[in-house]
Amino acid sequence: MTVERWIGGHMHEARLQRAQALAAAMVIGSLLVVSCGQAESPAEDQGHESSVTEPGVAADGGYWRDESLPEPLVQTTLSLPSPQDSAELATASLEVLSLDRDGDYVRLVMAWLPPVEGPALGSIVLSSHKHRYEATPFIRLVDRESGELIEPLRGDSNQFSYEEPPDIQDAQETPPAGETGDGAPQDQAAQPPDPEEGGVPGRGTCICSMLSGAAEDPPERTELIFVDFPAPKADSVDIVPGEWAEPIRDVPVSTGEPFARPDESSSWFFTHASGEDPPAHYGAGARYAVRYPVAARTEDLNGVTTTIEEETQEVSLPSDVLFEFGSAELTDEAAEVIESAAEKLNEEAAGFTVTVEGHTDNVGSAELNQQLSEDRARAVAGAISEHLEESITLETVGYGFSRPQVPNTNADGDPIPENQARNRRVSFRYPVVVQEAGVEIDLDQAGLVDLPTARQISAAEGAAASFVLEPPEGDTSETALRFDVLGAERHAGVVTMRFALAAAPGNRHHGTVFTGNPERGGRQHFGHNPQGDGDSPGLANMSLIDIEAERQYFPLSSGDRGCLCTEVAGTVENLPSSQSPMYAQFHLPEAFQGQVLVYLPDSGQFALPPEVVEQMTDSSRNGTEGE
Image (tube, rainbow, N blue to C red):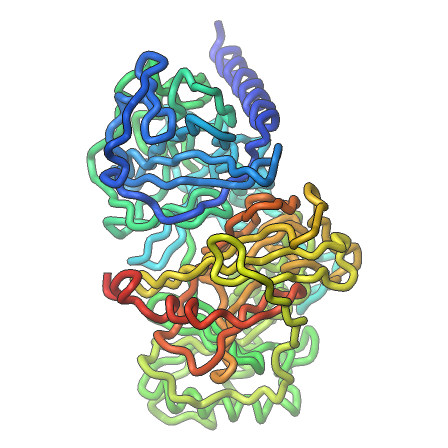
């Protein structure tokens, strides 16, 4: 047999296996998953009797598990309303068996355990919702020490070589086209990334095993999953399983302790040649390493944004208050804004170097936007320099559309005009100050648009409060929904907010609900989803507002790469009768000045219960700040 026929045969086999896996997943309806709680220590799962029904496979703690596997580093239960009957929860247990470092790369190994009783989730739920046909896991690592979100290593496709060593390319992902913005006319809009032209493949590609999606009862073998990553700097990381599940926190990273499958007859990896082990070398076949800074973004209600990344902060002014469309010439009205910005810099940046940064949206060629961003940065620096103290040194740089604060488009490449407007900005970057001076930049703009106040109803089971969100005008769902506030937890400086989505009382319409708004830029539940297909609900657009401080807080994010939040609800376009959990993580002050609102674009707003605000600010009940 020739080498070409051997490779081609295995590629054909892999395609068949993917199709079979996806079909199995659809049959059981286990297409989606969300996290419903913090990871549990293995010690907490002791005392369960095992009932062996197949060699090596046992009913252990309510889940089917290969008894020869080592004790997990950490375990978490994943649950979602069952597609067959959304009043029931489908579940699975996800165990982290190994996270091991070998030089520049780490390998994550997990076990997927279906329940002994009740509906089961298939592992296909860990894939990106836009790439389920690829049947690959989309898992990320959060390195809190370096402040980075680390995505899986990628090849040019999922048919990577087990023998070739990593050969990481310096490729940049090109933002998709938009429709309005600073740059060239629409016929010169930037194109989506192409791997052959140096773009990074998307969320459906990774150096990893595939996902079987099947959930036999009982299973003959335990399904194992591996994913290779660039190595984090920290000795422990958080693991984000999928696009919706709450991170599994504080997972330790070992060095030089590779995972070995104890019993090939009772566990398996769904790989190119089904059942074989992962490559001997971590990162084999990798061509791209993707890691991005995690930023905490806040905004004054008049439009000034502050984004903190590691040791620096970026204070941003909307370009629309400084320049005409597509121009680098300051308007007459810009003079007062620049003087106000100088007052803030004189108070907070004295003695430092301040970098004036120009940023554009994604419309027009990269060359045109790069030049425009550089010209605008120089124009602002020239105007503000005469108002600054001598101890402040200015530098300028333009980034074009390479560093958006928020995604310019959704996952389908459709533009999100309000996000494009946010990304058109001029920023001042300087070291983080311990205490803000209290000097606010006056943009002479109206405050935040008021949304309808959500109607509070009796709290659902397990919720601190429940609210009904009416459909926005023009939303084709025409369906009210229930939004539950489950609670909050503050741990090591990060606040995790937990919510849930469900059908409103009396609503009998289950199944496909979230179908969007046909009007370009029209309103819909939760706003236009930048990580989904535009219609599916997610929390990337949500925010918390301190009314007295006039300060708005957004979920932790990596610009257009995603957020530490439910990017796409586990039930996607469906509205279940039972709770579909959602989460969002924030960096928040230790105290608020007044009432705190939850702000859900287009859907509504409501005040958080006092006991939840207390959970957000009280670290003593949830974990210490210095951990």
